Image (tube, rainbow, N blue to C red):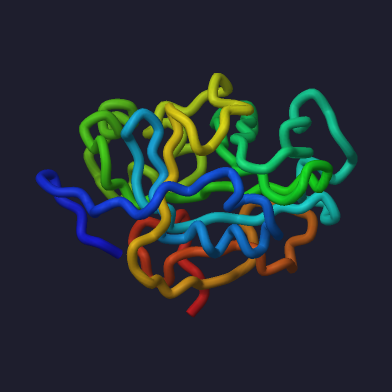
Length: 200
């Protein structure tokens, strides 16, 4: 990935529009690796994600729509925010045609933009620990339930396509008890910013 420092930031690729998410979630998820996610200008390079689909029991949409998960049922290109274990917010990108109820969980970022704000929000200095987990990155970017249902291609959210090739690793998803065998976790192989390394 592009180097990070206090004085420079990587250039941004083309803006991703909602149409980018209107396809199979397992195609969208690896294509997000290396893209840049910003919220009010703060964020970084997506280095780890997981895909979820209503046909498998680990997805929140598996048992049908509820007040919490209704945004997952479409249309694509919107944010789905939920509270994990009653503690951390998690951010997901809704994918596929309306009614399909698929989403990509953003698990980790390489911080590149707004480092001072992220360090202040997280109360730590270690660059590698700022966004190395779904709850960590939402805290660093200031994401809360107020961002639920917001479009992914309008302020305060901005997504930019990757500007260089990346080696995408795959593996099983983390922290779930159902459909654990599905290799629907994707990330930058060898990244120091992952929530957990991928098997070699």
